[in-house]
Amino acid sequence: MADELHPRRIDVLAIGLFGLAVGALTLGAAQLGVIPERDHIGTLVIALAFGGIVQILAGMTDIRYHEQLGGTALTMYGFFWTTVCTAKLVSASNNFQLDMVLFAPINLVYFLFSAVMVYLTAYRNTTLCALHLVITATFLLTFLARLDFIGELLPGVFHILVGLMAFYHAIASLTFAFTGHALLPLGPALLHHRENKSHS
Image (tube, rainbow, N blue to C red; front, side):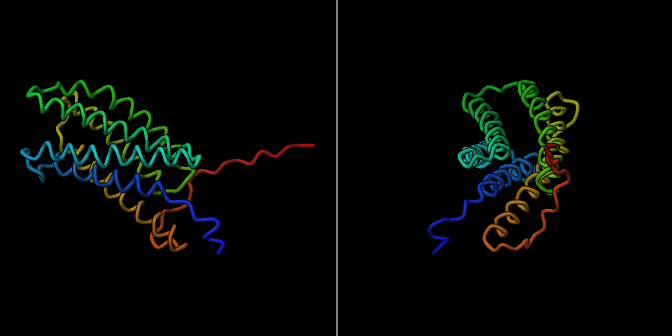
């Protein structure tokens, strides 16, 4: 009866991380050549829908729950995927190729954003912090690839890692939300807030 009067809050982060997992694994597979080049448009559509739209919707819901950290991360990463995938789809549909250097600044900004998120998520749990560490490395490698310093192999490998880690965290948090038991460990918070003690 109490559960009906006070329903449990939906684990929105899990939804966003599922979207990230699908988008990152699809993009990584394409970069590694597992998905052929002829399926380029399909890859972008999948990445746009799951990496972009799903994360934005989850982030907006998280913000409604007054979860600033999760809401900010999900919406900002969602807008990244939406912007980049849309630009590439427009380029492909109009038969002209955008220079990859166009995407270098946005990758650099998100590299810095993700580096800050590594610090902030250290207050949550080890897995989420490690995920953002890999995301940060992925943005750096993608930035270098856009400047033609490296190829697509390393960014592809790291996108696969992002996808696997996001999927693991989504499953772990979802099962914990519904069972109350940590069936898959997320690890402890690496940093802790200091309590402000007022002196009378």
